[in-house]
Length: 354
Image 1 (cartoon, rainbow, N blue to C red):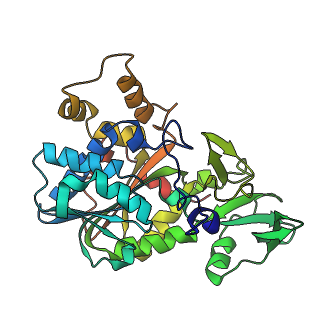
Image 2: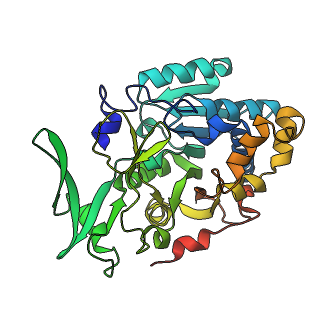
Image 3: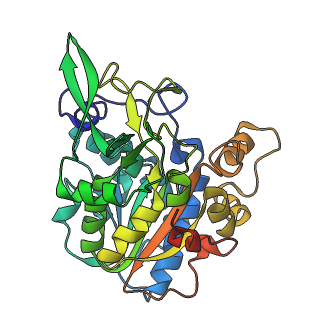
């Protein structure tokens, strides 16, 4: 998975992946600027909680820079850019070029680093949208003698799966914590890369927040006995493919996020869970109508393409229910709840174990 997505020459993201209606998948920033505007409203709430001083936004997985442009554009409309810096973590030069072109008007307010570890601690927010689902995961399967890791081998001119013991002590510890009553043949994923990323995200904050938007589940939902095939899929041309070994480098490969793991791991690095909710609830809590007035003077006409785009962000048939929003805080008060969780906060569900 790591090679198929991130190899500097043949990896999917290195070769120039396609996003949008004519591409392989769609993300919220490609749907409507409303998503970025509402994220900006949450960032304003975060900044207020930190006392209103200098505030650094760090985005990783910025793609072509749409979300950054929408956030900065909304903050500019609200005359709230003073003291704000925006850092994009981007290892690929062709994506950095796209981002730099789109964000050129903001000058030195925006800067780039190749890795989050390059940043010194500062107050602010680490922001990601559909990043963690593309981290390389470890795939495990329940066999007669317990869980074993699924490896990729090459034989007869084709990739094939083989199983073996867990590849590291860290993975073995996570495997040992899986429910013992899952049936033979049960497959699931463990995202140790997300744990490493959380450590870096926390290390880049002296006070502040980690805002994660992605599709995923609580641990109880993730490890439900009915989800016996796991969540690992490849995507191309807006179609899902169960065979992730086919045509490596030409398709996106993703696995859903286990938000309970993020909460558990985050505590080790000083991050406390503050809010967890479906995307529709998070966006609605931030006042969709007010944001639309700021952007376009009011709601779009009924049955217009713009209205359909807003519905895609909010309705369960679109991204409203499949995508979740999770906020963790470092050295900040848990109350009052962040603005995006005023309508609904399901953070307690991350404490439930199967």
